[in-house]
Amino acid sequence: MRQHCLTSIRIKTSLQAILLAAFLLIPDNVRAAGLAREVNFDIEPQSLETAIIKFSKQADIQVLASSTELDGVKTSGVSGRHRVEAALQALLARTGFSYKTVSEATVALVPATSSETDADLHLASAQTPPRPPSHNRRRINR
Image (cartoon, rainbow, N blue to C red; front, top):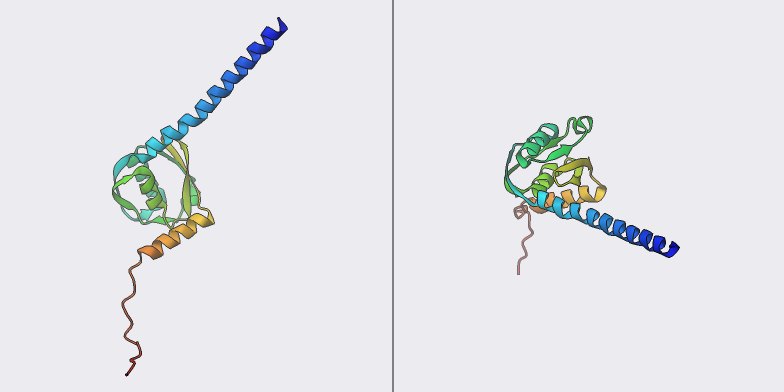
């Protein structure tokens, strides 16, 4: 009888572990699908607080953020057809903010880490057109 109880407990514990693992794996797949959708965006350069509201409506996702932290922050906006994730990254570029995925339809704005800020700077410098050649070059006579 005692051995039967131990076997039942082990089976129950194993099933719980399997169900927990499956539950933890599902949100990653679902979240990826929600942020991978392509949407048409039309958000002009403006305050980040206002832009996030427009983004939320256009992307049909919930964005969690502190209005006091967003106060005075500007964004360059985003327009055209983009994946939701790419549009959010563009909207947050050079604002000092990044995001974390909460669920398939919810993201939370968080302060960007220094590596994310550095990546924004490298991206901005890569998009800067090269300087025209200087007219102050030395002539070499042969």
